[in-house]
Length: 220
Image 1: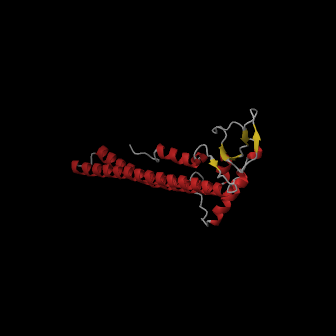
Image 2 (image 1 turned 45 degrees about the vertical axis):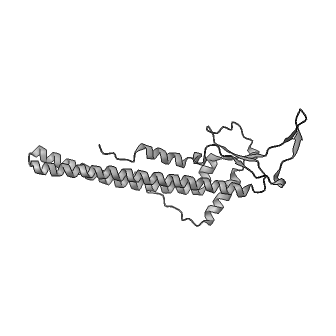
Image 3 (image 1 turned 120 degrees about the horizontal axis):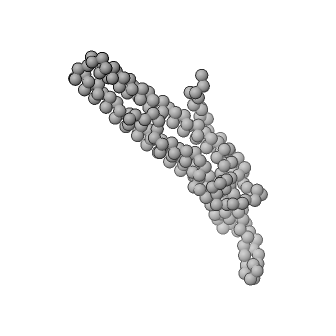
């Protein structure tokens, strides 16, 4: 049976990538021990010296929506996925056409055994080509999503290392509604805007051309 779409596993892979969970679920960045960034020490109830831990967090939902690298990535992957589906659809229609031709000849009793075997062999070859092409597309898409995911994580990690080079924070956590292990976060500790602005500035300087969104085939 010929499928008309990329297999569900690949679609799930793409969906997973485009989710900001690609950042690694719970992202924790621990600062270097720069003395000028060390928090003030205090006393616990039992007299032991304690050090206040400086924590900030990033809202992954906001980062997902506003980081242009992610926004452009979604557009590129959507365009590539639609191009793949269009190519597979064209192959599918060609196979259906061969099936229709064969069925008509059989119904009209106007086909020899030799011609029947020839057309049947052609259909089988076309179906094998279809399956191989779909698998190849799936593999390429998975490789690209893995590369995108790795590059995305590196961009965020590198930026946070630079952002926190003064040791202002001991930990930078990730927060995502309904997913995060953080059940409450003080808005005063939210550094998402700083991170988004900084990442977008670096992305703009990289000179990457803006992708063109695929046309909506449902509109006439």
